[in-house]
Structures are given as C-alpha cells and as structure tokens.
Image 1 (tube, rainbow, N blue to C red):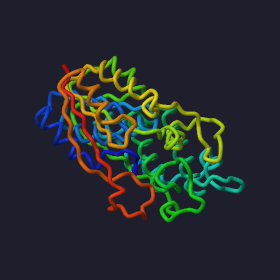
Image 2 (image 1 turned 90 degrees about the vertical axis):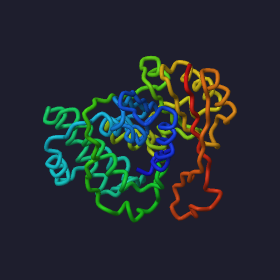
Image 3 (image 1 turned 180 degrees about the horizontal axis):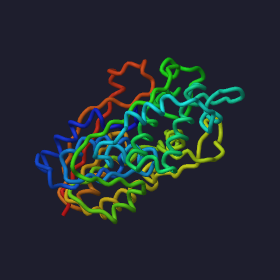
Length: 333
C-alpha cells in the first residue's frame, strides 16, 4: 500500500542501526512496533526475534498486522477461499450505496462494480465468521487481502481524504482479491488495537520501535474508508467525503505531543528504544534529544528520504521533495 509514513524504503536503514546497537543475533529478543501502521517494520523483524508485539489504534491497521504479524502458520484451503470470494455474484451494499456514484450518489471512491464487489466479499467473509466456517486466523487473512486489493483500485490520490472527480486508470480496473501472504515461522506473536500510551504500561520487552504521527494529519481521517471496510458497521457518513467518527491522536497536536511522548518514554519497560521522526515533525530534534537523554544513553542517526507525495507526476528527484529522516536511539537506564 502507498501509505503516509511507510518505512518500507527505510527498512535497511532501521535494521542496520538496530544491529549496530543491539547486535545481529536477535533470536531471544522481544520486539515491539507500537505505532505499526501497515506493519512493515514488524514484518522485517518477525523472522529474527522471539516475539513481535504489534499495535496500532486504527482498526484497518490492526487487521493488516493481525494477518502479517499475528498469523504465523499456513492457512488451510486459502486458495479455495480466495477463488470462491472472487467468483461471487455481486450485490449492492454499504460501500456501493455511500462511496460510489451509482444512480444517485456523488462520492466516487470506487467504480460501481468495484464497490459492489467490496460489499459482496466483505459480507461473505463476515457470514463465514458467524457460521464458524472459517477460524480467526483465516478471517483476518481474508480481511487483509480485501483491504489491500480494494486499495489498489481506489479512486484517490493515495489517501482517502478526498476522491477524484473522474475514475483514474487504476480505478477502472476490476478488483481481484489477491491473497495477503504472510511469513511462516515457529514463533507466536501478539497484535493489539489500542492506545499506545495505555499499552506501554502493560507490556515489556527488549526493543521498542516508535513511529508515531509526526504532523497534524490524522490517520483516522486520511484512511477512514479502510476502517469502514474493515469494520463494515452501519453509520451515517458525514460531509462530502463521507467521514466516519474517529479519535484524534494527541501526537498530531503541537499542544499535546510533547507530554504524550515523554510519558511513553518514561513508562517504557524496554532496554532499547528507536524513534523514527523526520525534520518536519511537530517535535524539534533538540526537544527529542533532551527528553530521551533524561532516561539513558542517547544517540542519533539520519538519512535523506523521499517525501510522501500523492501526485505521481511531480518531479520526485527535486530537492524540495527530499526530507531528512532521523532515528533517535535510546539505551534506557
């Protein structure tokens, strides 16, 4: 998924710094990715550590991580489930009625056909769950597959804060449910869907990776439609963009982020803490340094990085499109 703040391209930078500080043998370590997003960082350490603890407050993120991190043994009959879902007779539902143009609608997040297919597949997955046709692992595997497949044909400029007036080329393609394949391993991992500052008081481990929101953009608003597909609940969409009610993160406000961040560091029962944050964030580098230095040995690594841009036609190599990504490192006392 093309995701704001994704650390996919920074994974080698993060991994090499973790190795440099902690060592390359992580087989007995507990690794926590507490602002997991799409789970990229947790995934790159899943095969190397004893256990991954993954968490995110957004439900769509929980679904993705429950599959990619939580699932660790093969899904039985997964090909048959995917095939059956791809071949269902299409029916109109909540997504078609509220987020497609249809006969009377205005919103155009998906083509009419793809909206119906999302409704059809999502409803069928829920029926299978209620009928005990599928176990929990399979349920989240299929939901994650639907979220990613739907995202590929969404008629947006990457985020769901608005839809495009005309269907772009990728949105005109038919939705095909593609399996969200996860890595198999012998270790059991755990995935949460809660507030990070509450969770940090209840868990402990060796390595804590932090990738909190760094500006005023609220993920609950930017990815509201993924939450709606994942939850598939009934509500009245608000405004032109069809927003659902969402909780605002204190990390997205200059008035609350500093206190929230220090509380997280103070309460963390982890030996090593790594914080990803860039030079355009609400907290300046000096403040982060001072805060983390209160609790142990501090260090800093940095690298140049491509700024997230929704418009793919922009000159991606222009200097104005670059940002500096920091990795703040704390060996906690």
